[in-house]
Each structure stands twice: as C-alpha cells, then as structure tokens.
Length: 222
Image 1 (cartoon, rainbow, N blue to C red):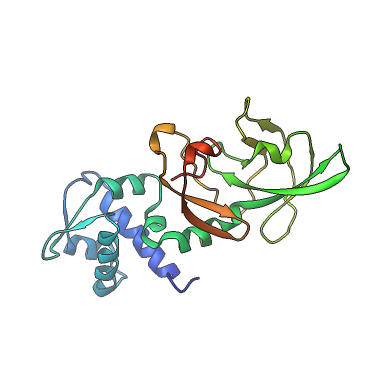
Image 2: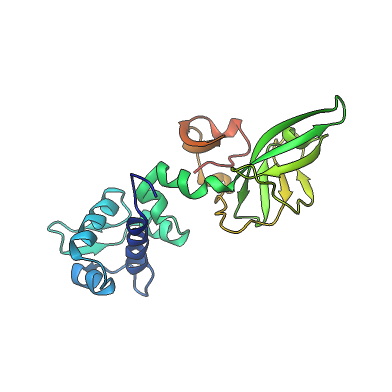
C-alpha cells in the first residue's frame, strides 16, 4: 500500500478504535488484557506498537505503566466520524485513501469556443455530489468529468451554484464504485482562521496554513 503504513496496520488501528470506543460504557478504561482478548488473531506485541502510535496521536491514552487504555475526546470524535486511520497515519494515508475522490472537470466556454479545466471532488455530504469552484463552471457547459486515471465519469446531473459571491458549486453525479468521498466540515464554528487545512491540487494532497475565511466558505478545512 505505502511505505508509511500497510493494510494490516490500518485495519489494526481501526479495530482498536472499535474496541475502545464502539461498545457501551466506552468512557471506562479498558485493560490491556481486554484489548488482547478482543483481537485474538493479532500478536500482543503488534497491538502494543499500535497502542503507542494511537497514544502519540492522542486518539487514546495509555496509563503510566501501560496497564490500561483510556478514552480521549479526540479519539471518541475520530471514531464517530470513522477517522481513526486518517489521524493515526496522517497525510500519506489521506492522500492514498481519498485521491480517487478528486476529479478533473472539462468545460466549454461558448463566448470564445475554448475548452478549459478545473478540479473538483466527491463529498460525502451531500451524497453523490462533486464540489468545485463556481467560476470553473459558471457560464460554461460541462464537456466531461474525468477521474484521476482519465476515465470519463458518466451520468452528470443538475448543477447548483453558490449564491452571490460564494465561489462554490455542486454537480450531481453518482459516486463511482471504490471511491471514498471526502468528508467536509460545513459548520463554520468548527474551524478558526489560520487553522491548518488539507488541500488537494492535481496529484497531491498537502497541508498548508492559510486563512480559510478567504477561500471557499471553509470547504476542505479540517
């Protein structure tokens, strides 16, 4: 998969999150023995290594001496939105998992007869929508939408443009199989100016510090 993580490591991190947060009374500490018992097919040494990683990311807390595993607010919130692996393995995993959500939009401008392109991405909410900038498609006709491999995505539907000066647009389009849509935090109160934000451009996802307010109503901010 990637030099920074393997499918087994991703599965283990996710499964530990499920054991720690997916049961009734999840705020109560668990012993290491309980963690081992819940994951019988995994050697305890591998579990210990992953617990240390998750502790380092504040997705759980190991008690001094390592005898018990405690919940954290960050870990509980990450579990609730299925983001344990994203936070545990960082940008490399995010780029790997969600790169297929990014699309290339080819448009025709009737004013000059020229074709141009822009970038968008599938979002999980609202479902079956591509998010892009309004200036990419306003006053233009969509010729085609391509995935990261250049394959044309069919069944493009209704276009919704942001009101006023909001440089945001939705394109209705069924989510292709095997594509993980990007989760977007639409609540304005969830982020602050100068928060770190993951931004997708062409074939890279990178993290940059910038004023989210000056861009598209905080979309892609995390």
